[in-house]
Structure formats: structure tokens, C-alpha cells
Image (cartoon, rainbow, N blue to C red):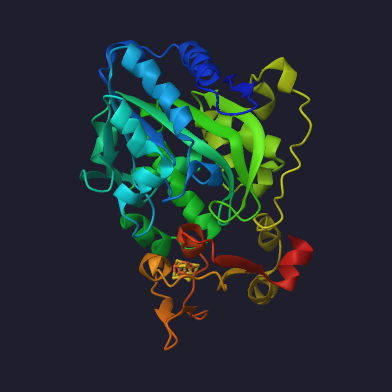
Length: 374
Ligand code: SF4
Ligand code: SF4
């Protein structure tokens, strides 16, 4: 039975010296020979959209700066890249998130993973396209953000791998795998295809997000910085510290089981073993989907109609059109008054619009039944 290690540091804020110390200590503990041998590094932060660091949507640039410094000092060629969601321009994402500034100050390459080609691979009966950038680097550093997620409940190191899928192919997968469980199975296939090439994982939980994540929730100071070479162990520890149970996060049980990891065997620093709950607001994302499994089919069908969370466009809409372009099933159209409207008969509740709206104008409306059972 494996006994993976998850490193955790408490941090009051984003202090570059402290971050560099943690990055160096964490990475050195993983003793992966590729860290010596490989010449090129891909640092893969969460660059979901064009949001400034204080909104806690994207990985903080100071976290990435600490990792960049570590690898430049080790003499590596450093790429920093992601494939942002929806139709936003990658240049606007780099500017808003602080990564463009990083690339002006250090000899690194910002890479748009949407435009570098891809390899198509099969896993668990699914075909997945994964950016060529991922295959061209010997060291992969996955740097996630610590957030709730409207479709997957939690987003950490595992969900951050989805940015390896180029551009609008992501939207197409949302159309093909619309609900939490089918999308979770797709992500598990992606994880199986990539996990052995991912050298190390960090989660930036210094400023994270609770409520209606991954983009419209509340920035929360959790003061935590995590690291591990095991995605499964890392997400288990980070998600449960946020307040989730194993059953709340649809992929956790499967990936722990696939890796042969018993939660009780995960090695975390002694000072965090009885860590009090972070008291995060998880109500918006914790739909008790397991409940449905235990109902007989006719009851389940009726219950599903009453038990839902769906996107609603609110007054803050600036008519930018990002949601219209991002919807994988074209369920959002323009009305005569110039505002977008969601066709609820077409909507598959993938929450991409909620995730991508740059003005946080799309709320999640939970049905009364969902509020009672959620
Ligand atoms: S809801 Fe958001 S993404 Fe859609 S048009 Fe309005 S501001 Fe843009
Ligand atoms: S309207 Fe929003 S939640 Fe519904 S299918 Fe389109 S992007 Fe997904």
C-alpha cells in the first residue's frame, strides 16, 4: 500500500522568499530523477480567464514566480502555459492574471496550449486530445488554485489538468459529457493518460475561493500552500481540509482506489493532522448527487426534474457575449433587447457560462428540493 506525502505550509500572504523556500523544500522531497535529467519544464497554472490575482480565480503569479526562479536557477528552459476556457483571448488572460508581466521580467516562454497542436489518445473508451506542449516537456509542474467548483464541487490538482485540452475542444467535451458523473469519468481518463508524466503538483490555497466557484465565488484567505507528487493524495487532503467528504467530490474515491492509496496512509505534517475545518461555504456546490443513485428509476426521473442547479443571467450582465460563444450546446441566444437569454430546454447545466462570464453576472439557482437535500 502506498504512503504518499502531502506537504502543507501556512502562509499569511504571498511573500516571494517564503514561497521560494516552500517550493524548494517541497520539490526536493519528491526525488524524481527527471528533475535532474530533463531540460525543459512546463509550469501549468490555472489561467481560467482574464481575472486579476486578487479575485482568486487564477493561480497567483507570485506562486508561479517562485517556481520559475527554482527552475531557472537549476538551468532549465521554462515554459508557462495553459489553455484558458471559452472564447477569451489568451493575451488578455496573460495580461490580467499577471503572467505577461512575469514573462517580461524572466527569460521564460508563455505558451498558449490551445494553438500548439495536440496528440489524440484513447483511455476507458474515450478519445482525448492533449496539447503537444505537454509531451514536449520532460518536467511538468501542475500549479492549481484552491476553489469550489459548480460542476465538480472542488477544483484542485486533478481538475487543473483539464487545461491540457486545447481551446474549444473543452466545450465540445462538455457537450459530450454533460453531467457531473460523465464529465468526472472523462477527467479520470485524462488523469490516467497524464499522471505519470506530471512531476509535481502545487495548490495555491493562500487566497482561495468558496461559494459559487470556480470564478463567481468569494475570495477567501485560507492561508495554505500545498504540494505533492500524488494528485490523488493532494486533492484528497486539500478537499477534506476545505470541508468536503469523500463522497462529495465525484472523482476522489476512484483515483485514490486506482492509485492504491488509503486516505489514512497519506503522510501529512503532524501539525495539520487535527487541523480545524476551514469553515468554507460549500452549500452552492455540494449537490448530493449520490442520493440519486439510491432511488428507484421512476422516482429518480421525477426527482431529477425537481433537484437541480441551473445558471441564471443577472443584472450585472455587460452584454460581452462570452457566454453565448462558450455554451457548448448553443443554449444562449441574444434577445431583441440586446441581453442574452438561456434556453432552459436546451441547457445541459454544464456551468461553462457561469465559469466563463468575466463579470460574474451568471448566478447558480438551486431548486427548493436541491436546497433541502443539498
Ligand atoms: S452574462 Fe456574462 S458572459 Fe454573458 S454576455 Fe453577460 S456579461 Fe457577458
Ligand atoms: S447555458 Fe450555460 S450551463 Fe447551460 S449548457 Fe450553456 S454553458 Fe452550459
